[in-house]
Image 1 (cartoon, rainbow, N blue to C red):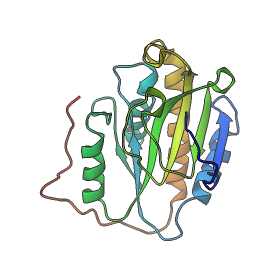
Image 2 (cartoon, rainbow, N blue to C red):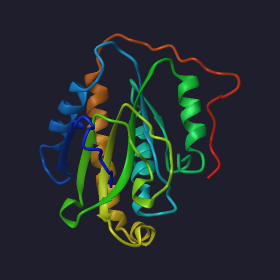
Image 3 (cartoon, rainbow, N blue to C red):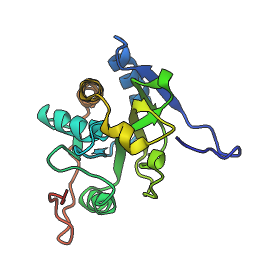
Length: 207
């Protein structure tokens, strides 16, 4: 749930139901059209926690995507090492210090209208995590992919806790398929130099 200023430039958005057979092809095509012309380090930052069924979309996506062993995508946020409200700023710092000029795609669950449940939405804009729960978290990413897992409007914490796991898992698998397709499309010969900071090594976060 985002409140837009009427003077803001419209955000480029693309959305489809996760059950649509054309989802992977069309959304992959759209996302690639938003990628920068010059190669960068592509970061998939999956936000959420496995302690809440509805909020597990990000960690599940990160887990499934890591299992595919992507060649061009660096994945942060899994079921075992989630990125959430408590450690998000630390995760952002680690990404920026470990990767040179990163292009970040943020993945998260969201709530919406009943007619939107099951839609996967991608925006050419940073993600505002925690907006539906009125959490003041930093915006993150160059673009984002969200999945509408349930209805918004009241008792959001309870709604997320009572979201069907089967729907969240199916949506996570679809997003994984889209990102795997993108990884396969990145066929240029480019081996980004990973800059490892001594102060901020890659590590597991406390849940």
